[in-house]
Image (cartoon, rainbow, N blue to C red; front, side, top):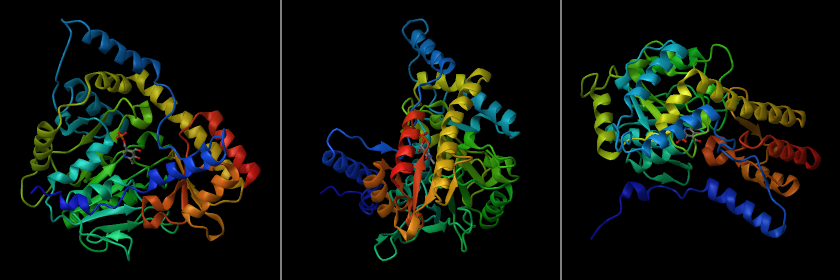
Amino acid sequence: MAKANSDFLKLQTGYLFPEVAKRIRAWEEKHAGEKVKKLSIGNTTEALTPYISNAMINKINKLQNRNEYTGYGDEQGDESLRNALMMHYRKEYGVKLSADEFFVSDGAKSDAANIQEIFSKDSVVAIQDPAYPVYVDSNVAGGHSRNYNDRTSSYDGLIYLEGNAENRFVASVPCGHADLIYLCFPNNPTGAVATREELKDFIDYARREKAIIVFDAAYSDYIESKDIPHSIYEIEGAEEVAIEINSFSKNAGFTGVRLGWSVVPKTLRIENGDEATINRLWNRRECTFFNGASNIAQAGGLAALEEEGRKECLSLVNYYKENARIILSVIRNLGLVCYGGIDSPYVWTKCPDGLSSWEFFDLLLEKAHVAVTPGSGFGKAGEGYVRISSYGHREDVISALDSIKENF
Ligand code: PLP
């Protein structure tokens, strides 16, 4: 008889977003005709920009013409886009990589979830807490943990790197040995960024322990603070120990278009292979399980890396960052303690009066009719915080904040 994958069976029910949606629905049913104001969305809301969307329209026009039509492309991504990514890293970060170290994908989520497949099952995995839930879930499903432990509210066998107010939500390197370490800066949900020195500590640790870092830089274009690295490869030695994942979702508004990339250097060190092994295995994995990103999306991505496209991306990012500035100022004026919101679209807010994440969520919903995201949904260390998101039309964000000001 067929059996379900026992590693998938270890996964706890995805509780956070369904539960947020359920409570919003219940509130709206009780208050007929009224709508909850959402500061809980991690999704972009503003329209695609003209230069980038025109590049996609041009691509569609070509696809309508049999002489210019193209079908399957390279699984690793169009050569022109891989070259443009390589040049982007050189120009903006001063980082030298080669085009065949870039793999174009349908977004950062898939890569963040799939990358663990090419590492040994017995890898010891360390993950930031709180964190984007994909890292924990994909490692559980991939067989890199033991069962969920109700007593500790965590999966046995995973190492959790706790972010808290004392360390400014930048966890220290693991105490013991880890083989794979997931880092995300600017961080979802805390909005924290890591300094050069903090990232250097992780690189030194990884070199010492012969570990690999998976660095999720999906929000790198939101960084405005000086001297904060945008790419892990700005740190010396990172090309020996780090894979970087990034996306066009949060800067070009491609959350629905779908496009991202991963950098898998040919200089990564592992125990049972030469330096190019991980690059080769990822290439093999992509060629086997993935048929390449949409050619229309790739035309958009290429335009997004050109001068005009970069300007459009940065102005889109600035729109959300202005929302974040408004949120920060209103929430601080109310006397609440918050973090992030400067190099990130997320404002990580401490619940007042010792309330739990869900208690504060319910209070804001009942009193101000506003939804935020309970921090505890991102991991145990997120308890006592909520994530306030700047993704939304300006007028909606302001209306939600006015309601908090009036009713809180
Ligand atoms: N990485 C982080 C940290 C995210 O917060 C998100 C989306 O919210 C993603 C990756 C997903 O990116 P993509 O839309 O490219 O799959």
